Image 1 (cartoon, rainbow, N blue to C red):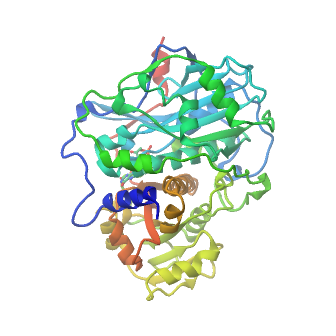
Image 2 (cartoon, helix red, strand yellow; image 1 turned 60 degrees about the horizontal axis):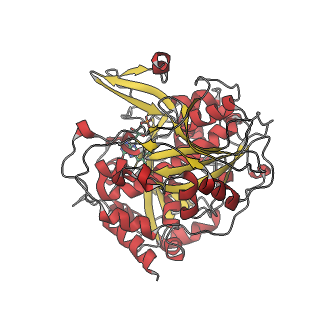
Image 3 (cartoon, rainbow, N blue to C red; image 1 turned 135 degrees about the vertical axis):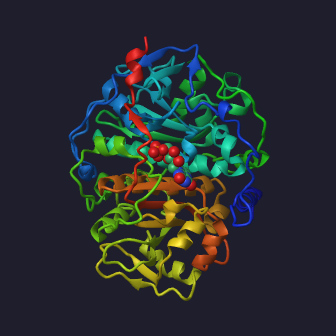
Length: 529
Ligand SMILES: Cc1cc2nc3c(=O)[nH]c(=O)nc-3n(C[C@H](O)[C@H](O)[C@H](O)COP(=O)(O)O)c2cc1C
């Protein structure tokens, strides 16, 4: 076993929550010094994007169907960024006011930052831009001095780990990765609204990506608040040419003119989380072989229903904070939501890695379906391996009327169990169903330590599908990062690290909190000069 994988296994074990003890986190929080969820670069040129809030007629249920790609221009790039990372609303409770975004985030702390790399001079001067969600604008970090043959756009994502670590301590690295997975999902759905596709340029190594995004420019960031490069995506618009060369982009960034410094996010840094630095180093991704984008025909246009437009669904997405325990979910909707997580559905055409995650579902309140524990192997070929690894008491009885490979493992009222497993949160038991995403863990991480991050990205991607599929079905979901890892494994009968649960999710009928006021996403832009 190599030492990077060892470090990852160590990190993973040490950041498990258990019934006896939560993973290490700060003993107290200074809420007045919460890290700013918005990053601003000062000293660089600002380009305001066209007014946010544009609508498109395409229905959410039609997103996977192919249709003409929209032209690349500032309005379409603005819409892509807004529907992926922009604001969706403000919430107010008494004197407290906070922004919500199209992408969800653990604790609403938003570690993910997005960069646009533009090589099309007709769109904007070519260079690297930071997307500033608060003002819906682009901060020009780098102006390319050489022209590049390929005309198009790329989006790079990075994480400010400190934003999560401030609250969640050592487990925060996991949450940053979940958030990247959600962000990728957001990007793919937003691109689909425009008839565009996303290619994950997973061949890119972290060192070259850091240089391209400028996050390696340590003098431009407060030391504790640096960003870590995660992934580069190529956006396939109508105009994208086939030619693309990572070296050319990185070279243009290296030779380009950089401007701006990141404003501090936070005043005091009382804690240093050495374990996060270790796992970050251990999971650094080298350059690897490029994996081709799936052909467009790969997508199945099956099963989402609903009459709402995609822009409506994306902007109305919220996390449910409470569920109505008296409501039930129609079985057809249950199947529809789960089927959306299968690898032949949008957004998984962008996912060129193996599908390593499978769902174990606690069914609480689904009409005409016995409450109990169910399994959905997302790769049907893995069913027997999952069966062999889990409790021998499980029935693995195929649910015959389900249009997906769903198996009943046992009939039971699992509400209390689900609640306890998810750190005693009632959202896991008052819902229609909650679930654990179980990864093919040991072999994947042992093969390449950086794959640890990809496993969480895949989990976040599935989470984003569940969020939007739930909204489309007229219900609501919530990601659950807080769960007792080994208690989940015990319930499933998993006895070693071959499989590990990496994320939980819950879906049901939300109960709205009438004390909270909802305000429009971008009214503040009217007051900005
Ligand atoms: C990775 C992840 C983990 C989360 N874990 C929890 C959780 O354990 N409990 C909870 O109530 N909400 C959880 N959430 C929901 C966030 O609190 C929510 O996304 C955030 O407050 C922003 O609100 P919004 O989703 O309505 O935009 C999680 C979200 C994500 C993305």
